Length: 246
Image 1 (cartoon, rainbow, N blue to C red):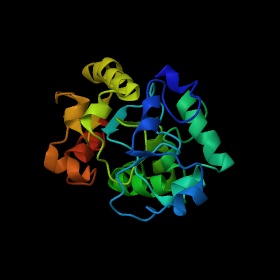
Image 2: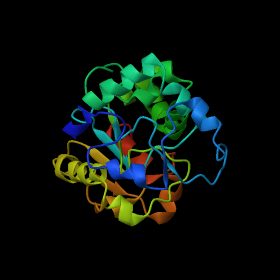
Image 3: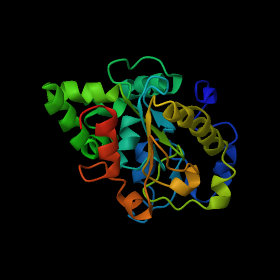
Image 4: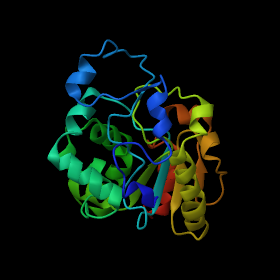
């Protein structure tokens, strides 16, 4: 994971071959993106490697809830947010695993409320935030901040796309995939087995290749389609139990 600290550009070392793949586009800014003939296409399957990669969010050492998923989505606003000085600083701090002390999981930081990722994760984690709020008798903002310090998300593929259709042959060549899978298996699974964290795989469980056991929740195919963490999901129930709110 240390290779992310010294990242040059947007591609992880060993992933440079993606620039030669038709499935990828390398728009440098918002104008390049919206003026492309495929802008707005709901069937867009391309990896947008011009955007900043998101291999993980949160403090990987101190988190106690780890959520493993597939890859970051795509919204036109990503091309705007990527260029703001505030987001650049927060994103760099996250890759370097320093800074962002109040909101290590930065997509729960209300300063990024205009970011598509903020809207996505606050909705997905709404039930968990509300449980913490009511259980601790604190404000919604305080509950959001508290959860931000406990949670980390790892993406199997760090590159953005609207729809994911990357061929398995390409996935198997990605150094970023190999290294994050190794980190999950070597570090997080071991931590879960020591009862120090909860690991939830909500998307692409076969590719992560981690089996369910105590403190490791793996979504089946039907569950993974939505990746829900709502009140009726086993992920939500696991989080609430592990954090002591059940």
